[in-house]
Length: 77
Length: 221
Image 1 (cartoon, rainbow over the protein chains, first blue to last red):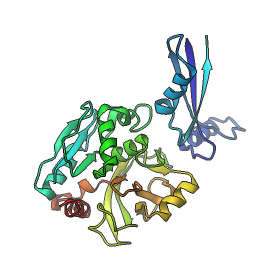
Image 2 (image 1 turned 45 degrees about the horizontal axis):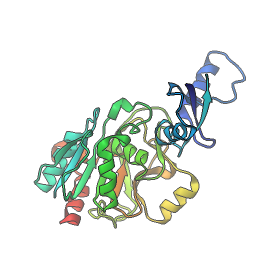
Image 3 (image 1 turned 135 degrees about the vertical axis):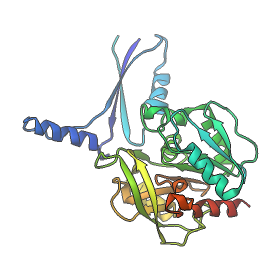
Image 4 (image 1 turned 180 degrees about the vertical axis):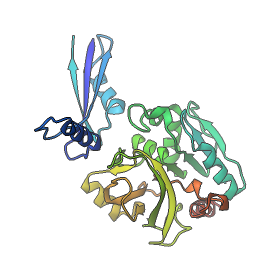
């Protein structure tokens, strides 16, 4: 089973990297970039019988730091 | 003082920490490899050193926090054994949950490597008893990810409980409420971004960090 796990910063958590990327886009002449938030994408291949609970635990225990990050699990196939 | 310094792949302040502990206490600490599941018995101090454990992969300290030795460190902290985490050690402590909050990329994105001024916010702890309340001292920092984050309710609670041990007196890395060093509720776990072990001997040009180790030594004697 293929998974895509998207980890993003929670609202209200300052993202200096996103801000720098936003500034660089402006420097390249792209107008109207109102905000950039940088995140992380994990593409994983797990056994087909992996439970939702186990996937959720992987996210909470390691892939995301739930103090500052949210996560979203997408099943690709 | 019977101390252990945990060594992770990518630690680079482990020997500095060991020399500082030996210089002050007269006893060389045991160096414990991250893959070891057990710590020596009856420790007076566990030190998590600075560096770039596991290459800072995923998040700073994230992989180290899940290494076998950290289960033993968490157990020992729960029994009241003093734990000092410096720089990457502080990041590891927040990743294990022994300390609340998280350490994020410096607000200006720079790697900050210089002496900074700290104020001692709580001198009534085993780590800070060698200092006076509100005393200021200069200690080196060297980090890229030292911007402390916790939500406002958590910060209010930490301040109310006297758990902010050290604060930066000026801008350094964007830390919430200028937090530079933080204690757990019981007061036996301290995480701090500045490096007291780099300010111990006259040859360092600064001995402001020495009193932290001397205070610990007196506290566990």
